[in-house]
Amino acid sequence: MIDANRVPDVSDDELLARYVMQSNHLRSNKTVKADLFMPHPYQELSLTRYLDANIEEVLALGEETAKELNKTLYGRADIQAIKCKVGSLQVVKDPTPKNPNHANIKGFPLGKPEQKAIALELAADAKFYPIQ
Amino acid sequence: MITAIRGNTETAGYIDTTTQKQKGYFDQSVTLGKQSAYNELYTFWQECKFADWDGYNAFAVQEKTVIKTYWFIEALPLGFPLPSVGAEPDGHLTLEWYSSPRWILSVSISPEGMLYYAALFGTRSERGSNYFWGEIPQHILELIKEVKGITV
Image (cartoon, rainbow over all chains, first blue to last red; front, side, top):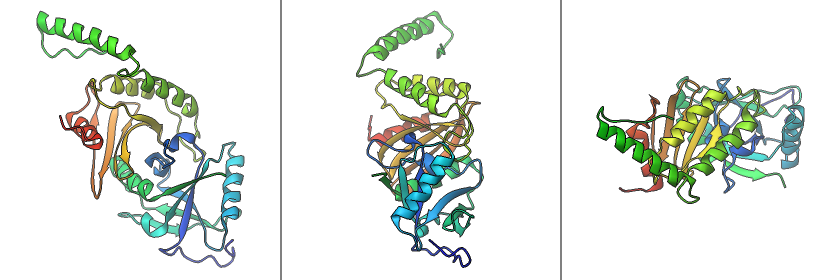
């Protein structure tokens, strides 16, 4: 995991994971729906960075999060940071005490149709990996 | 039941009643009906009728949103492909028509009956909003046809 005392900015080539904790965020062909990338009630989306972490560590964070929320972790949707820079969006580091690899996508427009259009783009670029 | 009468004559009323009867018949058939979509809607609602259903502080999906969505599906013309049902964290339900990740339409339905839609067609995208008055806006019907490759 990233050294919590020296968290670097998110670079364009980094891979990011968004945890899938709702079965209906998945289609039958194991692609993710845009609903997974809608930002409300915040104007930001929570992700975990792969930087200095292996898949097991990233999944362990997801499992821990799901357990805290009493949810089921179905898998993760991976997306490259540069693919998240749609329109006004930015990817920013947001380390938390439990997850120094935490990041957010910020800068969603306020309009719902615009948010949906962006979410469609993000979902199209994300790749789902189920829990083995 | 919402009935769309496009005229104020006895004939218009008769046509509408007949259409409703025929539609009821088709809705009961396995291949042409909408029952599968209604079932999916109800089943899915059980998963998202309480707040924080997604683990990211989502709002609960209200019953009136489910009812609006039911009427939207009901208003789909015969022969139109059925959507898959989903929900967004603001408590709106979504209906998705999907061909591929970049050939897709998503329509959100709010508790008040507002429709918010976005579509991707390769590199082209469309978006907008309309109020749902019981009939599906023609532009959304055209988008469904484009996603599914329906030419008539």
